Picture: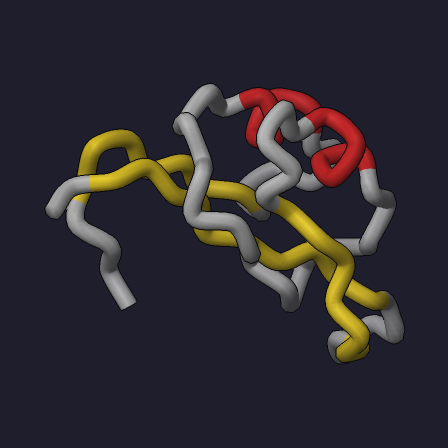
Length: 75
């Protein structure tokens, strides 16, 4: 079944929380884990993603977020 989802690259995320605040469906949370740069990074958590792309556009780190709309999830 096709669905909307995002992939977040936790290795480059600086945990600024801009995407967390911008997501209209609260699909993004800040992980309790810490990446190699010493930041708690954002991660996708909610299956109610609408694929709007707002997170992609507000993220200050290019390439951190990829949006998939109506696709089979790639693990």
